Image (cartoon, rainbow, N blue to C red; front, side, top):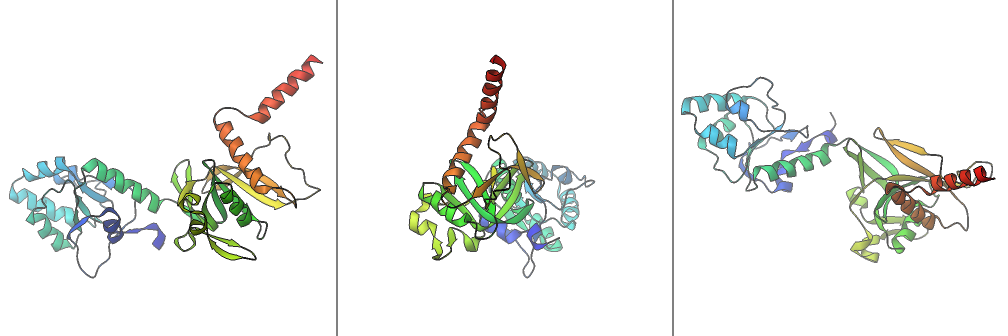
Length: 309
């Protein structure tokens, strides 16, 4: 398992502003799954099928149930619970962590954390964070822009004009998400989101000028940290001998992380305004999502005209 397929417990503590009740020194702890477990059955003494590799969340229900146990049973359950390699135990609602919990956490070198969040909010926040961090991911060479709310991934051979097109789109009021390298994550079974690596965020490389800071030049409204990917636009040099779709009836797709994304091939030649073409492509995609397909409508009218002749 690669280092990118895990999340440090220390990172989770920092991002979610959790309080450390106990954490052994000189040891790192990681979580490898997005799933979360509420150990109600385990506190009742049932440890078969215990999902111990997940972060364990204790809410008010588990807390009150476990508090009513006698000391001998509590000790036995806690000893067995912490004998499993749980990534961390988080107690919600600022509930008091009892001394016996800390005792057995120390014995087995486990992490115990606390938060003032209610249980539902904690579970939702933590699940969303882990989903993002541990989702299947890849990095693609290209440019990602937000055009009229549509995430457009611009691809093409080097020096075809991807960054220059993105710059013109920014000047036309759209937003840059990533240039050169786009980190793509599969957040759900049907959702891809892209963002820029931290080092490259908000920067564009324009040949002949160099690196420019889009946020600094055009303001915070010209950039966006992440965006869902709706369509792929592949730029290529105009080939007189190649057939290009003129009606928009031929559907092409590109597979990214096992998901098919609609793909448009846009030929580039001097005098053609590529940024404007991408704007129209985004608006047309949005219109089709609202139930109107201009190409199909044109075909219907043409067929009707032919039938009347």
